[in-house]
Image 1: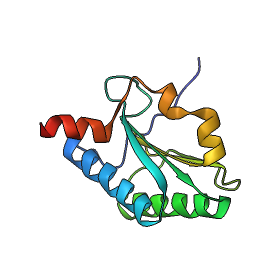
Image 2: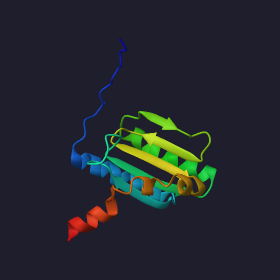
Image 3: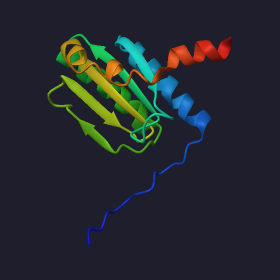
Image 4: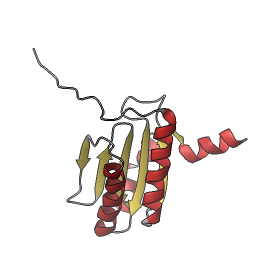
Length: 134
C-alpha cells in the first residue's frame, strides 16, 4: 500500500484573505514592471488552484527578478510554498502556493504555452471585478 504524506497548510485563509493576497501579488509584479499581468479565477473550474496569476518578463533576469519579488511577498506573509519550478532557467518560473499558482514567463514561453487560452473557460479576475461593480 502506498502512503502519501499530506501536510496541512500553515495558515488557513478565508476568501477575503485569498483575495487580498492575490491583489498584493499582482501589485508586487506590477511594481517590478511585469508585462500583461492577468489573474484567472479557477475556483469552479479546477482543483489545481483557486487562481492563476500569469505575467511576462522581457528577459531571463527580469523574469527571475519578478519571481523573486513574488516569492519574497509569499515568504514575508508566511504562506506555504508547495513548489518552485524553473527558477534557474528563468524562461518560465512557477510558484505554487496552493490557492494561487504564479506563472512568470518570457514572452516566447507565454505565447507557446498560451495558458490564458488553455484556461479560457476561467474568468479573468479583472472581468469578474467589472461585472461585480455593475
